[in-house]
Image (cartoon, rainbow, N blue to C red; front, side, top):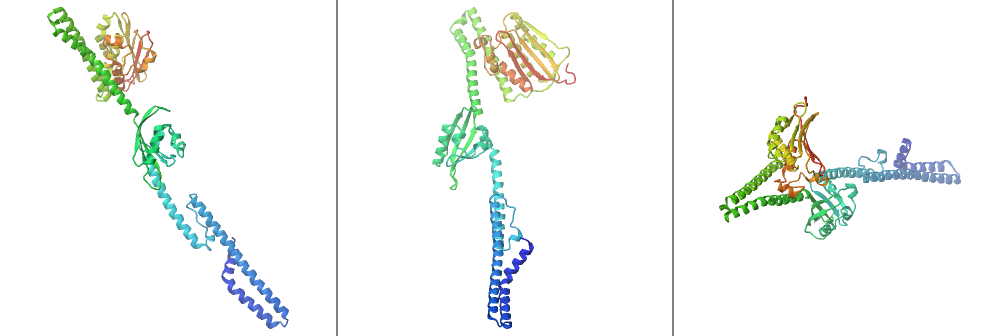
Length: 467
């Protein structure tokens, strides 16, 4: 409203009630005193009344219009507050007629702003706490629609928060057992739950506990989800390890027991039989000793209890010493054990005992699984900051379908031949963990009937002169 309109409105509203009667009475008195004509007096009275009515009407119209605008401004402010805008106020020129209402709206706006700010802070704190939890948390309402889901639960169920909120739990998680637990939690006060295995989109075992919400104002349930897939896998590995170790220990112990019982039953009196059974006892004892030593070595490597002493080690002396240790075995099978040296010395950052363990297992395996007249080759070279060590044989090879499992404990491609050759099934598992302890990599390339090649990548210790 322009300034002149506000001034007129103020004058009319404050002085019209006093000025108009006095003005009308003065005009009427003048007409009576100075006019003898009654028609003139009547006209003056009529005009005076009309003027008073017009002035009152104008004052009321201006006041009503200003009041309407002020009420519209208050309504717009309430709408903006309901939409979350707590900063706006009713303009000063529209507050005059509704000053008490405007002040009350300002106080309400400030209180709402403080309370909503507190609620936002509490919600952010709750979301931070929930998203930092390892356990998944899902809250549903009485209609089993998802109200809340934290990051862990979203990862476990392979979905996003936006895709889950507002949808029924049976659409989000395809598991009849989970739906049953949610229904039971909504209908009773005792928590329910258990372990469930989900197949899609990824196979995993989940431990779930569902409980109803205790607040009277909110009906629903909360699910707490723990991923126990790794725990179940480790339990399975442990059970498999115990079963395999028991079986491997049982075989030599049974042989030793049978030989001792035979000797006690009278074979000891025959020198030839006695010598034969004692040799068998000695072989099985050595096999048992190798198995125990491999188990201890693997346990130390897997537990991290054996920390490698990393230092610069030249490879040539270690490889030549390893070849010398296995040369008699190779010659017994009429095999060639070849060493292919690089043009210059190569040194790696490694632990001597761990490196010897790797070399011994690879060369021993290559000789065991290569037939008479075959060939085993050990070569190494350096590229940039990496040393490559290869052990290649012309043996029986490994089927492509089994290459991914050869580093598992007690896994054998040919179980009958492995036991016949005295293998424990732990050598390649030891190699894998030993190489990992040196921050290296191990790769294998093989074809059935065409031999096998193991490639080890180790860190060079002489980066300036890789050779």
